[in-house]
Length: 82
Image (cartoon, rainbow, N blue to C red):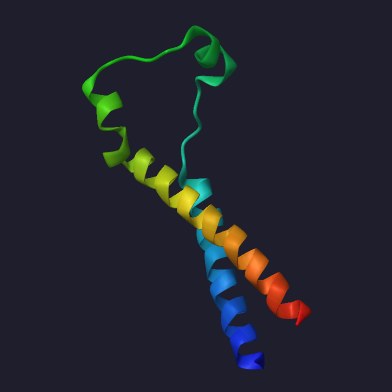
């Protein structure tokens, strides 16, 4: 059981560092509250293919790593209470 704990901690550390790096690589979204109120939605090529850009991929990886972070946090808390 101890080996499994060390393996999970290693994977958890890799996920944490990856999440920090990916979050730091993202650019700041400048629309803020005014973009929400005004509704700055445009129907152009960039908006339709936003997921294929660098920013879209970074956002997707941030979400994936965030979910993995939450899952591993729960798993490690269960493993360490046993």
